[in-house]
Image 1 (spheres, rainbow, N blue to C red):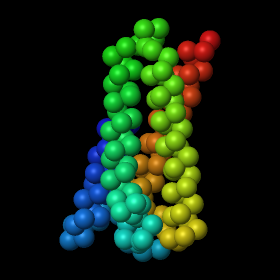
Image 2 (image 1 turned 135 degrees about the vertical axis):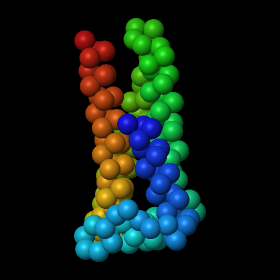
Image 3 (image 1 turned 30 degrees about the vertical axis):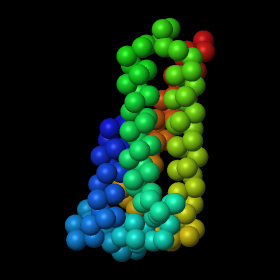
Image 4 (image 1 turned 60 degrees about the vertical axis):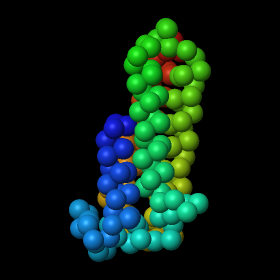
Length: 135
């Protein structure tokens, strides 16, 4: 899921910087990637939100790889907690981004929604993994 997220976020980042590339997303109505990606809210602290997504997914992939390389019980507790915290932060940010798309921009980006689902999916995996390890 992390690697798929890196790919989608990278694609959205390229679209942000090169508007000549055609968007593989509907351009009218409630689902309007162009409106979302060109809105002032598509940039945070001078950096495209999609580029923040690339970084977030890359770090999530590093946590996943570290966890796979050191499966429980050898996996350090700090690694489990860090991965859980990272995905919890991501899920919280997704809620904010979804609110921004719906209430502020007035449109949904289909590719952004797929990235959001991947973030929530990674969070669910962390929750389920924590529950299993706690038993």
